[in-house]
Length: 143
Image 1 (tube, rainbow, N blue to C red):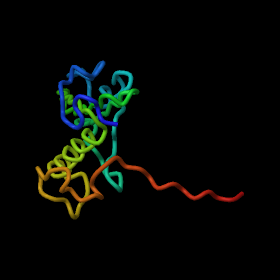
Image 2 (tube, rainbow, N blue to C red):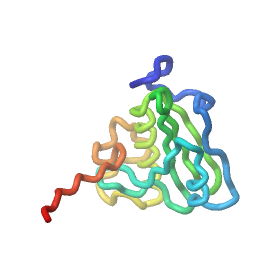
Image 3 (cartoon, helix red, strand yellow):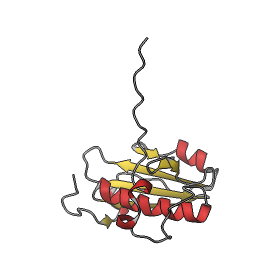
């Protein structure tokens, strides 16, 4: 469900109830352990679960409002944190798609083949590189 006032736009981070801040006291592992309630570190992205970030220097976290009103994206880079807010999960995930592409191009830690150029808009990034990683369900084994 989209936010009633800001359907798919990025909007002021102040709409989030709380969000991660700059933290130069440790590394990304420390930052992830201290994420505010409701924020979750996102370690992998895309159809094959490629690294999203480069721990312990770079990490990403998502916030999903329990009422489906706001969604957050936090990007930690060596203690500096950038937080953005969105009116829908789809808009936040598109921003994460673009962030993932940029990270994979610069850090060379993602897919090895088929990546489009950096700054490709999310809707033009091939589907296999977009969206949260969802492992395929494992078949049940009989005992």
